[in-house]
Length: 67
Image (cartoon, rainbow, N blue to C red; front, top):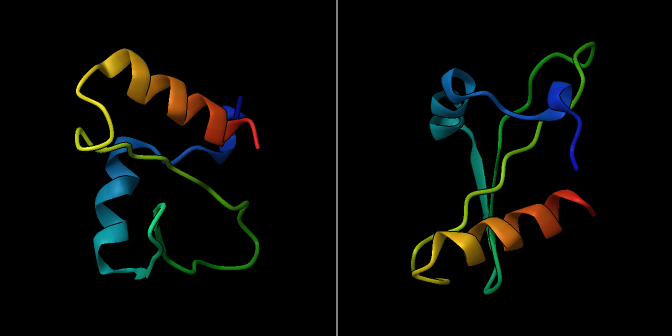
């Protein structure tokens, strides 16, 4: 699992709206460059289009975090 210090918190997630986006058929990557002194932070969002069941979406999210 991704360490807590590397996860994007809810308050920080709203700041990504102004960031840059990379589209791919398999995923969408949003990022925003911040000062180089801070650690990189990541968030994974799985849409309901992928699976209607939250259990399946969480499983996908955990697998991506483990990479």
